[in-house]
Length: 220
Ligand SMILES: Nc1nc2c(ncn2[C@@H]2O[C@H](COP(=O)(O)OP(=O)(O)OP(=O)(O)O)[C@@H](O)[C@H]2O)c(=O)[nH]1
Image (tube, rainbow, N blue to C red; front, side):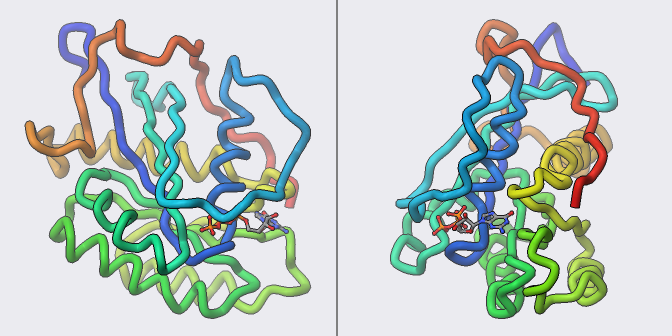
């Protein structure tokens, strides 16, 4: 997959209703990035305005290192026209719902449909995320029904918690590895006018040292 010492950038977006925990999930993932100082576990975050992005370089299972450009989008309806404009140029999407918020689960189909309508089928790789899995007593979406929804869409499913740091690295690693496999198999192709996957030079890669991402044991 690597050509002449060049590597890839994958652009990934987190989509889902307001307050499902997208920013917290992403910040939790970024806390684990090598070279990033570890602040106190801070879960309080203001609602996202428009789109914010972060980058992290990871070593994928099959060998290549890739730069992940991670876009945190606002879930609030009033920012939808801004966030929509980013859908076309993503290769990976974490579709996030809150396991304690039934409506956020019911809206997953809409989020999925919006991206498909913008991109066309088979362009982006999706992973369904049932977030806030630490809140077991308040849960109102079962693991089984989320698995069934994911299966009906032909996508993967995982439960995460930023609060207990459960499956956070695993979710991002799984998505990145699936994208890489799709690229390898030709299911996803590099295109000049598409920002989802980009070939980048070594010198442009994040200066952060990278490491193999071994997901730790789930502490849910
Ligand atoms: N218990 C629990 N609470 C969480 C978790 N992740 C986020 N939260 C809380 O959920 C609320 C919303 O989190 P955000 O990360 O701001 O949600 P968001 O999806 O980015 O919201 P928007 O930016 O408005 O789209 C905050 O009060 C967080 O503290 C989690 O894993 N467990």
